[in-house]
Length: 485
Length: 155
Image (cartoon, chains in turn red, orange):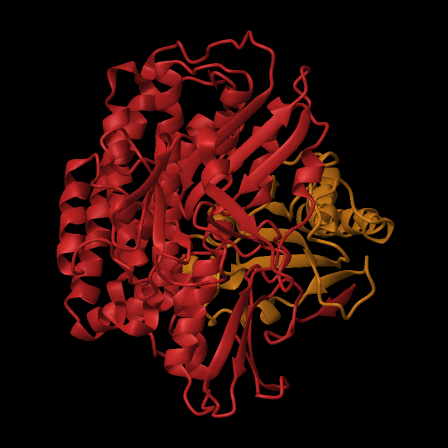
């Protein structure tokens, strides 16, 4: 057997890539962020029975499989024009809250915390989760692993499988909850709620009490002006599983509010020659390039966008945290990209509260978990708020329920323009007179890491992480420097 | 713990899963468990905790080796990336290090087999012929290793 080793700087296929173009003075003229795109998913689905889609779509992404499963299941409710029973909706929401806890925990502790807890300019060898645990202590590290595991086990209990759930059906779910399971979830939810409080406190102690970090969050390097999109309930509070999609303008005023079925009236997608990933924008404003401000039509999704697009949270502790968030950061909307991290932790707390609320719901163990569809299948749109933002699944079938057309708009897609604009802004502020150094890599990365983009994560080829490459081009368009991690 | 990694509907990416499924069908031993999944980082740690030894079968795309070639990955080469901050999730080496740091029981020996692949970005069922031909090779290697570890695999 041939033994090989992989040099960490080997250029593997599927890199995320940032290209930065300098002008005559060595300042940044332009910057592009490219996400490697997987191809052919829509085509893969065509001709298959629609009821299989909730089990196929989690394979799009290894990071948010439950979000795809849920959006898909809701799209099937639409295809078969069937309303799930109240208990089925609550069971879906319970599983979904566990997913958000699971995802937000991993993102904050593995990806965001190294920049803040260890420091944005710390040495790369310390700036990782190991460095975070070394700073916050082993006990805190154990809490991260334990509660993340609890969230995972709740997903597995309800979804049938830990990461690729199989329980979603048009009109409901395939598996109910026993009293013993409910009690187990309630106990775990109590722990998760405490963990949510702990995480928010950690952020406040380490980030908000350090004026250098607050300046970094509020500074121009990491600020762009855009619209925001997120799902809301009937009282305009943040909603993850169901509701209407609300858009606020760069001043924070409601610009649009629409039911999932109407998404095509509001969102259009621009294709650019240099990347496979499309650029969604607000259709009624139109595409005029990646422009900031009200005329630009660019919007953002994800934790910060959800808090901006809503008027509050539906749970008491998260509401308190929501108010503090805007009071501290200068009112609504908050345009500071690094505030995504704080918003994410407020959502972690909210989903801890939500888990406990649902685990104690009288209806949750009701065996009435499915309404059998009796209509001819046709067309459906399912929208959920994935951990990274609004996720849209739209299916059309023939009368036998065989898929004719699939359209998906994923969170990383919605944020594509904003990520590019954020990277360009950061590069322009950080690179002067052609001076580029290795520390730049992390400072520029922080601009898009806040969005938690899915970099073609359905591919799991070793070494199991997505390397990033930054190329600097001189005024003649020649690569003058390449940085990799 | 024998883990097949990959995405079974993403062309060659599924090769690790296809190979481990084949092996699983031939082994019934109380000390050997199998798991196939499309996961990385933290999730891998969950699966490895509590096991003394592990085998991981995955794909790799270096562009330096012939498509379909089966190779054993030097564990040390993964360790060289342990200190780097990852763009998404944590890598295997970081996950293992974290497990050790927190006092979890992680395997002391991990053997990683990889197959050089051609296409891992197109949604399609099945591998290309060269990669498909690696499945029986992997099957044989993993069975051989398990026999070394446990003797009779159907005991």
